[in-house]
Amino acid sequence: MNINPFLVLLALLIGFALTWFLVVRKVVREVPILRPVSTGLDAAAGVAGVAGAAGGAGLVGAAASGHVDAPEVAPEVVTEVAHPVAAAPVYDWAHRLDAAEGQLAGASEVSEVSEVDEVDAAAPAVAVEASPVVDAAAGAVDDADPTPVASGVDYDAEWANEDTSVGLDLFDPEPANLIDDSDVIDEPAPVDAVEEPEPVVDAIEERVVAAAEPEVEVAPLPVAEASVAAGLVGAGAAAAVRRAASVPAPADGSSPEGYEVKGDSLAKLYLLDSDADFGRARADIWFTDESAAKDAGYAHYIRTPRPDAAARVAEPVVAAPVVAPVVAAAAVAPVAAPVQETLVDVPGDASAEEAVAAPYGPGSAVPKANGSGNERER
Amino acid sequence: MLEFIVPFIVYLLAFVVGSLLALLVVKQLYPASSEHEALADLARKGVN
Image (cartoon, chains in turn cyan, purple):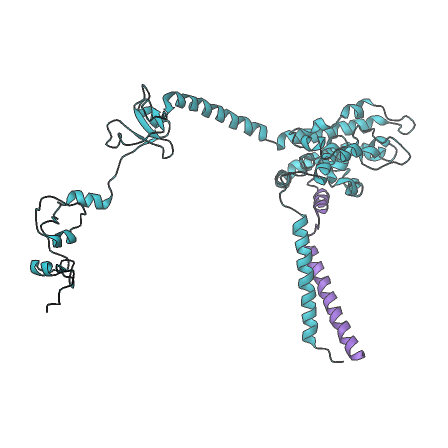
C-alpha cells in the first residue's frame, strides 16, 4: 500500500487539465462573441426581448434569455429601466456591448434614468400580484387564466413562428412596431382582479416610451446611412459627369469622335496625343481632354526608360560583330551596330591580341575549321 | 487486493480534486457557460 505522491500529483494535474479543456472548449463554443445571423432560438429570444422591453415593461425583454430564463430573471429586472440593450436584437452582440459600455461610461445618465424608472416602477410593483396584465407581460403563465395575452403579445405564437415572420422583423430598426400596445392601453383590465388598473397602464406606457426613446439614441445608423447615402449620391453625380467626359473604348480599337485622350482604367493612367507611346497604347477608355482624365483620377503616363536602356542611350554603341567577334562578345549592347566606331578591350585588362586569341575571355579560343579546339598556348 | 484498491482510490480522488479545481477556476474566469447565462448576467448587472 505504497502511494506515490508524484502519481497523486499527476492524477490531480490530469484531472485538472482534462476538465479544463473540456469545459473551456464548451464555453467558447457556446458563447459566441458575434453572431451575425439570427436563427432559431436567437430569433425567438430576440423577439421575446424586444416585445418584452416595450410591451412587457422590460420584464421579459431585460431577461432576453428566452422562455426558460425569463421568470427567474424577471423579478430582478422589474425595477430596471428598459434599456436599448434590451431593445436591440439579441443577435446583435456588437450593438449590445457598445450600448452597455456607453451606459457604463455615462453612469450619471443611467442613474438618472434608473431613478425615474424606479419611481414609475413603484406602482406596478404593487399591482403585480393582482394584475393579470402584468403577469402576462412578465411571461409568467397563469394556469387559472386561459387567455394570458392581455398585453397583446402572444409569446407562444411568436415561438411557433420564430423561423418565418419573426426573423425578418428582427432587422427592423424600430422594434417598437412589433408591439401592439394598443391592446395594453385600450383594453381594460379585469375589474374583479385589479382595483386600480391605471398605474399599471401608465407604467407600461412610460416603459414603452423608455424602451422606444433610447433606441433612437442608440441607433445612429439612420443618420450615418443618410450621410453615406448623400455622399453616394454626390459620388454618383460626379460619376455621371465623369461618364459624360469619357467613353469606353470601342471594340474595334478606333478612337471615338471628340475623344482625344487614351486611358487605362486598370492602371488609372492616360496618354495624350503628343506622347510617344500614344500610338501603340491600347485604350479601354477615352477622355475628351486631359482635364477630364485628371478629374477622373487618372495620372499622366510618362514613360521612364529603364536604367540599362538609359545607359545604352548615353554610351555609344561600340560593337561590330562582323569585324571583331571579340568586341561583340565584350560589348554590352546586344544590338549589332553596322559601323564599328571604337575597339573595346575585353574584361580583365586583356590586350587586343589576347582578346583575339581568347575571344570569349581568358581561357577561350576560336575553334578550328574542323570544329576542334585549339591547343593551349602558353 | 487492498494493496491495489487503496492507491487506486487515492489517485482517483486526486483526479476528482483536480477536476473540481479546474471547474472552480473556469467558473471564476468564465462566469457564463452559455449564451442564456451570459445574457442573464447582463440583466443582473443592470446593463440590460
